[in-house]
Image (cartoon, rainbow, N blue to C red):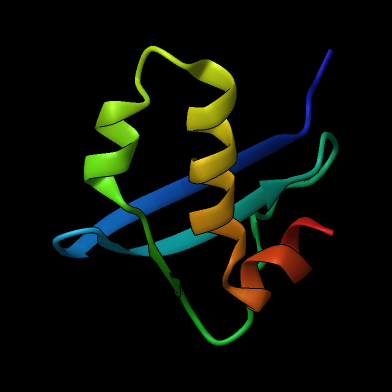
Length: 79
C-alpha cells in the first residue's frame, strides 16, 4: 500500500529565521509537487519562547503554528 507524503524542510537563514520548502508526493504519483509558489517561504520562530514552553505542549504548538502560518504562502499551501 502506498501513502501520500508531505515533507517540510526548514533551512536556517539566521537566528530564528528559516526558509521553508513543502513537497507533496501523491500515493500513486512519480513526481514530487512543490507546494509553495516562487521558491521557499520565509518563516520566523521565537526560539527563546519556544524553549520556555518546551514542557507545555499546547502552548508550544500554538506558538510554533503562529510562526509557521504567519506567512500567507505557507497557509495557502496547507489549505
